[in-house]
Length: 118
Length: 403
Image 1 (tube, chains in turn yellow, cyan):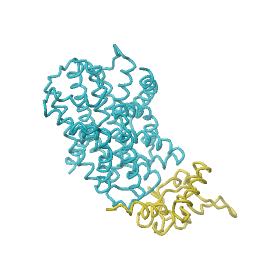
Image 2 (cartoon, rainbow over the protein chains, first blue to last red):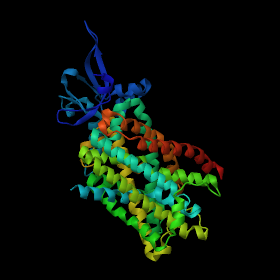
Image 3 (cartoon, chains in turn orange, yellow):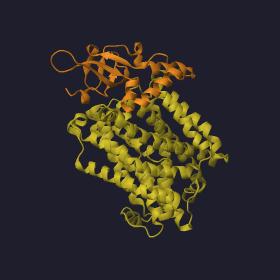
Image 4 (cartoon, one colour):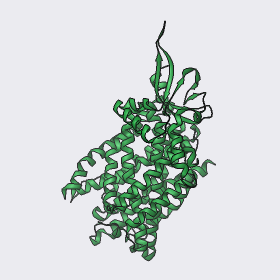
């Protein structure tokens, strides 16, 4: 399996099929014999912006601390929680319980949820 | 069942084709160059039919929307290029469409267009906030059928067939060549709007298309765009027969409003105003949704116009911000016709960026399997978008600073 092509930038869905972001990074583990193993997938958070530019990532982190959700956004998913790699990457988690949806929750509670009819 | 879908798809094509861009550029082309620029419209229609068909096929075979597949295939850094280009162009076109609705209201009431911008923005936002995808898509395209009035208008003027057919062949202008090429690329930009096929792919995924839809898709894309193009051609024809002999050059929208009064009398004015309002509002809704789709799909957020806003908060936030911001351009008094012309030419400039990544996907078996593009559609789309971009890059500065 070619990791870059097959996993990186793929849509991630949780166990209920809820989209929870994209695979923005892959953490590899070097250890012992054989080739490196995939340890974790990184979804959202500073990793996404760091791929575009490190300066941008720092700035977005400052903005978040100042105005955004208090919790650090983004989540690392251990490879053992990955249940399927196909059209999407499916993980055995509940998106609402993870920091992957930190911004989504923040926007829902602070902005969209306050508009009548939401 | 499939027949119904084909009919609906064609109606969507007809009702959704004409909007502020094609209306303004077609009217200008007809009043200044008669039938001579019809070829640009024909070329645009062929190109957009190919692109719409491709985006439907991509969605049916791979179950990916265009932004989704682009992010996955090219990575986040490259994805930013089409994301920013399409978003900027879409934003300006959205402002033009909102301007079109405002102008229709000005024509109907006499109250200056800019005062209508907040109300129009609110109505558009409310429809997006409350409406479902099916309601918005089908509602706007059914109402958009009112633009068939232009076809009736053209018919009543007994247009001469031979010069119209001759206009379908590209020819060099006899006068004002800078203006001629500027209008040619503006017509291409107005017909080949990236928002149209980006929106279409999201719709096909939202309607859960699979490979059994490839045939339906081919027919609806081809016929829908062709009939839609005929309505735009009718605008060129009416303008050529009504404005050109009187030497009227369109510098303001108020002049365009008289397009149908010659063939249809007082009803012509009413139908024009209604067509302008309805088609521009429909396009404004589609463009706002397309921008929300683009961002949400690119970053893997939850999206869907049929969900409640709080279920896809970030998606809803995008259109909630974009609609009032675009309306602000009208509120500060930017000239809607100038903005329309500028954004159509800019669309032409952006075409290669919006189209070439899509062509790569359409030739990648990982996405389209055995349903990849043939060489004709590859060549047609590539040549039209690159040539349109180059000509627009030359014509845009000439038009802005030349005269």
